[in-house]
Amino acid sequence: MSNKLKLVTIVLVGLVGCVSKSPQLSDKRIIASTGKPFDEAKYKAILEDMQNTENETLNNYDESEESQIERDEVEQDKEKDIQYDVAPADEPVYTLTEEESFIKNIGAESSIPELLAAAKKTIANTGTWGFQFVYIDKDGNQKILSQYNPHSVLKPASTQKLFTGYLFFASNTFTKSYSKNHLAAMLHVSQNEMADSALKRVASQKGYESNQIQNGLSILKSNYAGLSDSNRYSPIDGSGLSYLNKVTPDLETSLLTRIYRGGRYAEFKKMLAHPGESNCSYNPRGAKISRTKRFQWPDQLGTKHPFHSTVGSRLMFLSGRLHAKTGTLKRTKALAGFVDVKGGGVIVFSVIGDYLKVGTPTAFAKINSVVAGHAKYIDSYLK
Image (cartoon, rainbow, N blue to C red; front, side):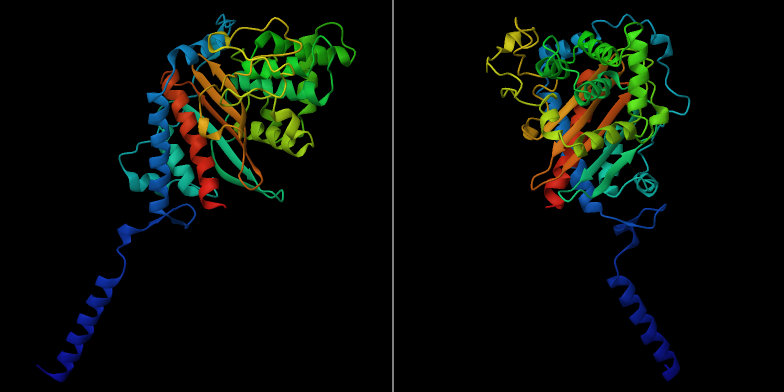
């Protein structure tokens, strides 16, 4: 073999050695739309945790409890406008058979693409979903953890009561016949008539003695005109019972951010539903309501209300940290609120599943898993 040929052979062998030692391209993923690297191990860990939460929720599903929640929420639903409950023509459908393509097309909607990918895979093909999770750290800095269809117009169901309840709260419209205890009771157990009553009382305070619902709605829209996506807000009632109510996840997290930054967050959050059976701050007599009576009104609503809430036994590991409003219609399930972060700060979030193709247990389980995944991510990776 000539010296020239030997040299070529040595170079080729060296190149082969280098290639064999380099990481294989299939071991790494890049988000095509952003060029950012994708942490496969982190994604799999988050997805596995979400799946475990979903399975745990389904295994521990208390049919008597949750079905009662659903009956309470839709008791007044006479399907008067259910004809409008038609899924949009462009309802997204994701094919998860090609995982590589799925990851590449996550898009730039997330600061934490692994969180978004795991959440999207969890809810894929079960309805039309929108969500947004925003982390506000202890110094007030704001960061979107993940968002999916954040500007899609969806039914809020009873998360509409957040808008009504905070308007009433911030307006200091309290009276002896509708005290802070009444407002907390309305938000805790999602009483529709009390929500509409709160809206009427705001209108009355502003001097409107007739058409109080319509005038209340005008006040509602005007009060929230500065929120993100406020031009897409279409309130029809104070309760969220109508299928014609429309919000976006971005609008709801914008409202929650206003509440958090408004100076009375610590007081307002205690009025919201929470996991567990601890006594509520707005229960001055400290009276406990038995499990069999948790959905019944106490005799003196003005001075006490059930410590139990529509969140019930869901997301128990966030007891003391989660304060939120549930939403339930026949094909809509939602959850929006706050998760206090260990060490300071908060996650404000909105998750809405609309035009659902799955039943109540599965929908609740998927919402639980997505919320839990984000809370655990903050606890694990942003210490």
